[in-house]
Structure formats: C-alpha cells, structure tokens
Length: 211
Image (tube, rainbow, N blue to C red; front, side, top):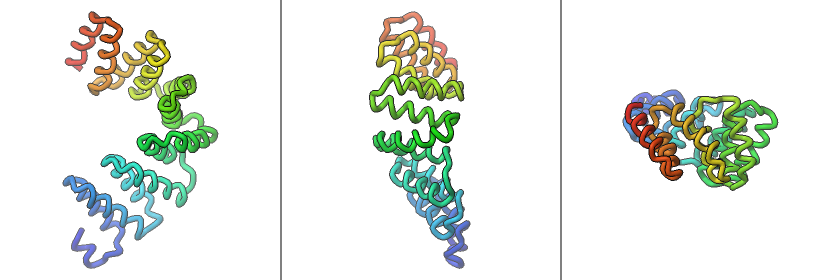
C-alpha cells in the first residue's frame, strides 16, 4: 500500500487499507493518521469516518472520535446511532451536560433506540439524578433485555438509593447475560459480600469459575 501511495498519493482506498494494515500490527497512531487521510481525500467516504472514530475510541482518543462523529452528522445528516457514539465520547470526557443535550434531542426523534436510552440513563447516573437514571435505564432494558451493561448500571443506581433487592436482581441478570465477562460476576459477588450474604457469594463464585 505504501508503494501504491507513492505512485498515487490521492488514492483514498490505499490510505484506508494502509490504516487497517497498521492497526492489525498494533501501530495505532499510524493507523489513525492513515485512515483519516482516506476521508480527507474523499469527504464522501463515510466508512472511513466511522472506522477512524472507532479506532480513536479504542485507543482512548475520545475528543478526536467525538469530532469525527460530529463531521459525520454534518456531512451525512442526522443518525441516532452516531449520536449514541458521540454521547459515549462525551461521557468518557465527563461532559455530561453536552451529552444530555444531544441525547434528549435524539430521544425525541427516536425513543425506541436502546443505546440512546442507556446513555441518557448513564448521564443522569453520573450527574446523581438517580430517578431519571432509573427511568431511562429501565426503558433501555425494556427495548433490549440482553445487554449486561444496562443491568449492571441499573443495579449500581439501585444501590445508591438503597433498593438492594432490585439491585441484586439486576446484578444477577448482568452476570447471567455477560456470562463470560468476569467484571459482571465480580460486581455481583462483591455486592453479595457487602450485604453479608456469604453463602450465596460462595455459590456464585463457584459458578463464575465454571462460566
């Protein structure tokens, strides 16, 4: 691909493929730069924007990812999925007020998008507006029941308001849904230990080993 680019430096697909090649060998900064060239050369190459933003998120460059997703909206029109990705970046950057603003706007046009509901719930959780957090997290679960992060965040919220029975229900659902992901078993078992429910904690610890 470098040879192709030497011959034709304005081949956006060569830059795009070069970026993925760099990504596959772990040279992420070079990958990011190469994929970015693909849509600088061809501003209508939507896949380039998405792949570049996704890589930026993976390596922790949330500000850059947010800016790229913003370009996607400007160039290709409104898209609730892109808004969800943007809000995730803003939440990582602790810019909750901005995230809530774009999410509430997206929710009005697409109230059945589970990720929009989830990120709204997460924003309100981080802002300590717990009743609103519960409302949107429950909406997200109603739309898409089998997302472990939805249940875990709702459980965390219930803990903060002292609804321990509800918290246990959703920690258990998070662990069962994310069966092979140790963090959800850890959350559930830690909760049981904090509640001094040692027998159940031991039972689920054994289950987590076999999961």
